[in-house]
Image (cartoon, rainbow, N blue to C red; front, side, top):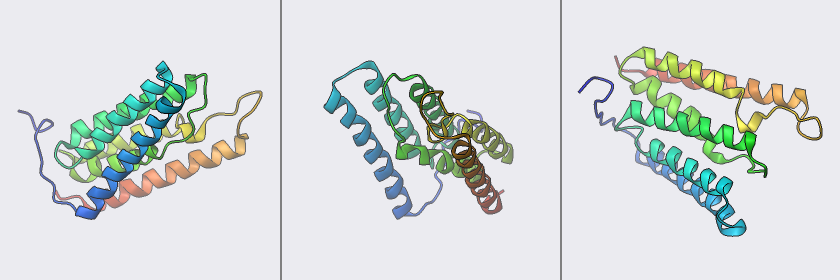
Length: 171
């Protein structure tokens, strides 16, 4: 078993872990409401499945840090593509808060500090494709100023989270 696959039992606060589980469950319920309200179309079922993958990854962020990070970011990338290509509006989900949570976990508790740097770079690139900062469309959508502001907010939050986690990292 390599250091990447190692199971780590990172001590945590019970209220913080519970809050993350509630965030994941609430997001899954919201995604599931699309299926309940509009029927089991491929878009709504895929949306629910991606929310479940991200939530499951978040729940494991203290035991399997790297696997959790990979699951969360793969799920977020899939969700971004789904929102971008969906013929219906899926809105902005609170599950997007998984990005900074997962970045913090891998930056603070990852096998080496390089994992945190890699995660930060991937998160910064992902900020440009975030469903919360979709590019404007010719017919409707947010202005370029709004999109630029949202991307800047994403970048500032991610850099701040990384810096806090790197400062608290146990080496």
